[in-house]
Image (cartoon, rainbow over all chains, first blue to last red; front, side, top):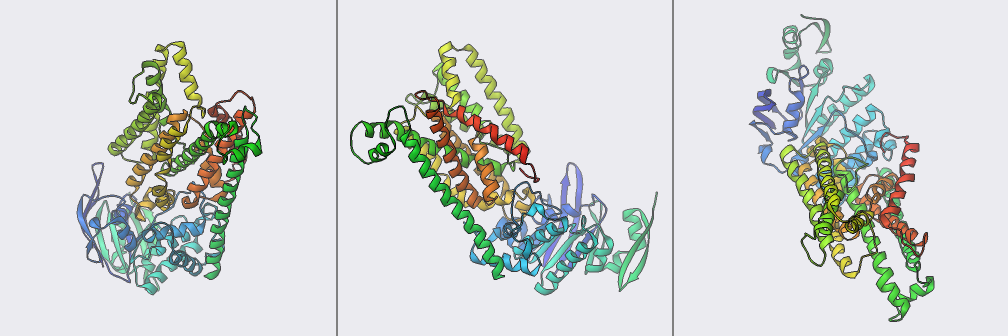
Length: 255
Length: 340
């Protein structure tokens, strides 16, 4: 279980996160939604210690994340950023191999190479294995970054807007890969999402953030209401039901 | 699965073959270099003189040519290695060992020694000063990084500031010096392998060779830095620490290389850059391979400098500056990918 208690993060005199509580069990998918600047990305960065929170505790399987060594943390938690700069040439295989860093001392072992090869095959990336990462399309790059996180062998996976910048097909592919990973391997996933419908459809629970504070927390049907979206996003919507999931249709902005 | 694994093994196998090939080229160039010089000790004679105990050929080979060749190898190795590390740490494929101002600060040390006779060691006044000030500037950078954060932007800005500080001070003191002193300073800045003996070689080799195992161990961390600070942090890399260690070791290697020879340019920039284009960005291979490329470049440059205008020897720094020209033209023409 991943548990977060009273998390606070200040950034230049603004409370980017205030009193955030969160709980995630294995086999669950939790989506964090909220307007730009609500603190979704900041929350993820606090968990993987890219930034340091002012207050609060993060417990990963009972251990305090702030006291773990970075490499140990990287073995438990995988983080997929929105994009990865590629100023240097590197193959797809080597990119995914980076995910094995928590297990590499001098150079990758046979096991590390086999883990990567297996992953590439199961994610349908084998033809791209020796291609250069920067030559790939946006969708392919995102799949490779996913594979890199999977290669860490983590129990928890964090995704920062995994579908923003992808076409419809790749959006479905990525969401289904994440779902599949969670169901098959029993890991847990937190997704910071802009797309409310994808979030509703694929998540077990949704956390709605507004201005750094938790606005609402629960199952998609419970959280995605016309009133909540009006309060947090300032948008008037109607909500239909699609296969037991709420389907949000935006109507107009509210002034 | 087996297929991908085999293909990757083949891919890395090719890199190893390339390095062996580079090693062979190095030996060939070294042998050629051994046979060139003002005295007419030819190819066969110089090779046998390596092993035979006495005689004029032996003296020329062991006292004049061999130390020069070994120093060329060491300096090429060191500068290329340092350049590779700086490019990795600053995430900039056009970075060089001098991006953080080391050349200017080392030069300042040399100026202090030449104009004021002020310095740290009596036997090696100029070299000792150059070394000390080179390291001083990197500690200044680290201090600034500690205060303002160790992002690549901070370090490069700090490096530029330091470069201006020391080069303006150098200019000021040169202005106050005599003609002979200015002449000596100008020649120091040309860079030269001519004044190097076995004792200097011993000192330089300690500083250049010692950091190598540490750098190899960090090669995967360098790989991860290329993915961005955030991804590297999330994958378990202590980015701040790696940058600091990298700056210290690469500065040590650079200072060790140039304190006896003066500033030799372009090797630290060109070697990792072209090696990366051939062998890729995996630092486990890139570090040793670009070091080898550096040695070949410096050896060839030095040999050229000794042949072209014999019996005059063109200072190595001048020859390597000319290397920069075709290199940058090539980059300009090439430009087909997003990265350099």
